[in-house]
Image 1 (spheres, rainbow, N blue to C red):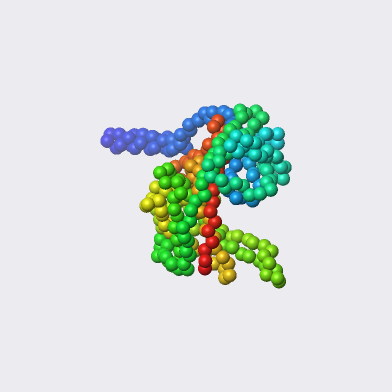
Image 2: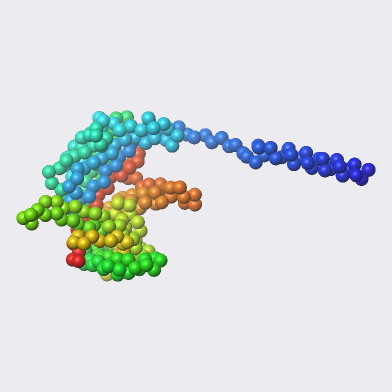
Length: 305
């Protein structure tokens, strides 16, 4: 009798186990309702003082994460204007070969600080977009030195060091900076006349916790760490300099929107394919849409080698 009870108990446990081991027992299906995406205008224009390249704006619309690629459009009949202190400065025209709205100027873009620039975009099917930025003042480099194997990296290896002394030209307010290093190659003819000048970017890294990666500006920082309105920026590079080349430090003064955009964009790229990173929202100053209009001033400082 005891054997029979044990047999039925074992049969019940086995039946329960087999029943619980089907495919559905280890999975759960949850239906998520994805709200319909409402397209919004997208505007992107980044301008650097003294730039000789054309003003180039991307004008488009947003699309949902599940929308087909065909919902992404670049309108050819938008009206894109740039105003300087309220006065019309440039009309940007659409170019099919680059799918952007551009303006070719006869001279480099102005580096006059304190000037208010306004971008206006009338995109068919959307409300007009207006974005304002004020050109920051030119930053001040007091000195810059480059020393081969002048410091060590985070792992103790010898690397070349770049030291730049920066002075805050607007004390009392928060200022935003970027820095990059460029190697200059000058090609001359048989008479010694310059026929071509080319630049290669030298990528920078740092041990300074007050500096962070800034996408197109290599490293970015604010003046919160300045002492007596001055700061010594210490960076390094693994780059091997070519013999006979010159060096230039480019120090940028950014608007707050520029700083927030490049900082969030760097964080966005770093979060891609990282299962432990939180999603990053890229900064936008387009009200009722996406994108940015940014201004950056710049000082170029040559380094004696």
